[in-house]
Amino acid sequence: MPQSVCPVSSRLRTIRLAGLHRLFRKEGPIKARGVRAANRPQDPAERWELAYSNAGEYAYSRGVFEIFPRNPHRAEEVPREALESLSGSCGLEGLHQLFMIPWTVRSTGWGDQKVITPYSVLAIGGRAVGLWVDKPEPAVKAVIPVERIAAIEDVTILLYSRLSFLSAGERLTIRYNTLARPGLERALLELRKKLAGLARPVPLEDSAAVELPFKWKQMSTRDTIRLSKEAPVAIRFAVAPRKSRADIERGQMLVLNPHELLYMCDPAESSHRYGADTFTIPRGGITGARFRGEALDVAANGARVSLSMVTELGTAAAGWLA
Image (cartoon, rainbow, N blue to C red; front, top):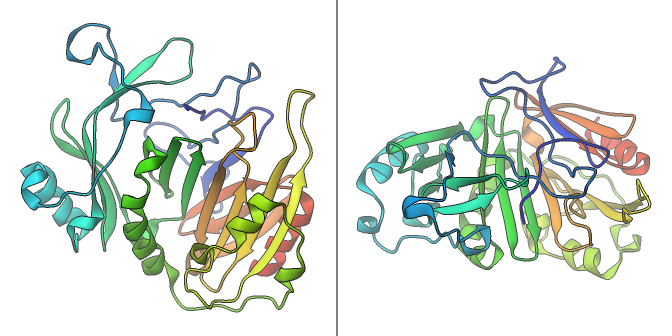
């Protein structure tokens, strides 16, 4: 299920340099992912993806749903150059931190446009996250040091999943079939713990008294939102009103644990309440937060993460992080 980088009337999410109005990169400012007026999702090409033609070895399009990244069982299964490059740049501590991602041809959501996602290897290491690709020339295409990660965005809609690591100067994104998710869980949890820093106070709120629909109640009870099993959490939930007659009401949930702010919502690119879009922002990197209009702006590790949410949640989050 492809999706967009172009903010329209749906949720606005951007990353900007702290203290500035935009984040400038070689590819232009990082923009929000949203939905076009025609409600066709967009999923723009990454800078390491290749132009698609109907000829040659890529003529058969397998699509995002056929992407099943897997952990190698032996070092010999990983291309030698990928293993050497990612070990040096990312500080690998084990093969469970590597994910071999098959090539695919996928739609960008712009008319009939398609791109080739080359075979790649994702590393979630002790020092950095990085991505190596095999074409057009084998090379590491993105590296984000752990200390510069501002947020992790984790989108799941039925069998479509997208995982992004966000920083002031880079966005590293992979797409994959949700059924392959278990292979990523261990390394992701290890990364979150590396980002955790010192425990910070959590407001004394009766989270058990918050009335949650079944889907959100199930999500609120997962150990992963606490990072550690017995950690206290503060929870707020609200429903965002529809923005058009064709839209739906979308749930939004804020969770504050001693180490992170988590923002979860019904994905903007889904026309139904399937799955969730989750932002995880380490509290140790947060240097400021304020709610303006319809967005919570969080300055973190040199970037500014802007999350669209209802006033009730935005003011609560700003107060928690003050």
